[in-house]
Length: 251
Image 1 (spheres, rainbow, N blue to C red):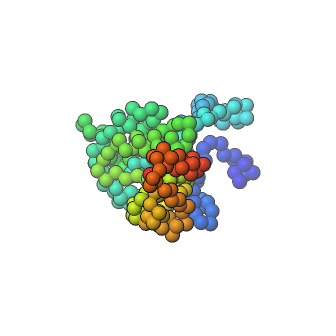
Image 2 (tube, rainbow, N blue to C red):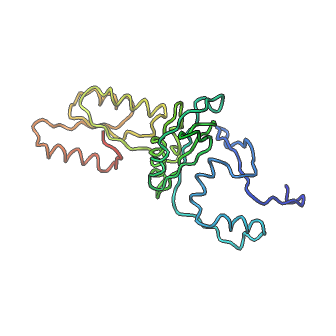
Image 3 (tube, helix red, strand yellow):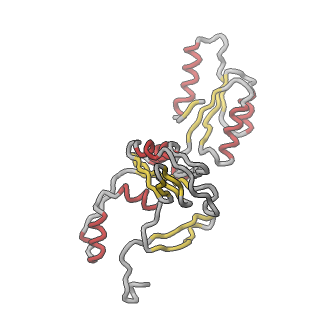
């Protein structure tokens, strides 16, 4: 490498990676900070970046303790329609102030230009929203809250940021009819549009279609008789099934 050639590299080495079925593949290396990667990393840096760079230049980084905030960050990029191919420019951008006003949230502008009183798009990657929180799920949610407050014609952004690192949402579904609404949820889960798991289906109708749909899809299901029972007794029986499953959402 460079070190053995008498020319050691000191600085930032940014790798562009692609995750494939065969494992991570390197697309490129850049001797610079990558954006938007830097926008999601540096907000977590507790130490002084200038001092880190100074110690790097002097070869004394081992004498400086680099510290990080014990938090999580997420960044969502808003791009112009057509990017990474041909894209349009000159679209009016609104909502940045509203996004920036959110707690622990910053908006980084990239492909923008000021024209009179308007802020316009001028690049493919237009801007990004970064949020920091105590958990990854909260950081991701906050970043999406921010990006949804911003608008420009043709604006597009990924809807799956952080999804691979987030746990599945555990769902309990209650129903007494055919279960057509549940079928839409099942299909969204199978197609990986929705990262969730139906942990059980409960019905108070013995021959309800929703129980048959659950059985056909290998989903645990329960019939709880409600006729002739007090509401309190019925709910107690339902809770005894639901509580041990620790669902995130009951539909």
